[in-house]
Image (cartoon, rainbow, N blue to C red; front, side, top):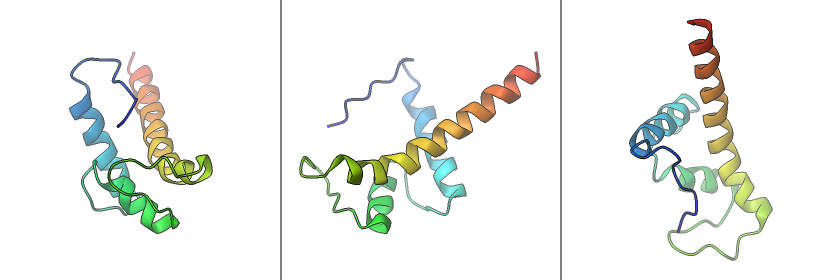
Length: 86
């Protein structure tokens, strides 16, 4: 169960599209809900659907870090481009 809440109601779809686009650019060809399993497999992390409380914080970071990190980089880039337009 994810604890992250979307701050802007209705933005989930766009965030999923962003995740899909960013991760596709990184070579992952899966839908946004399953990309974490592909990253986990690549990193050797035993992530499974459902409860994953047995994972260490290091293992969880190996999965979430590349996904979230790349999304943040793209959002910063988008914000900078938007600020140039003003």
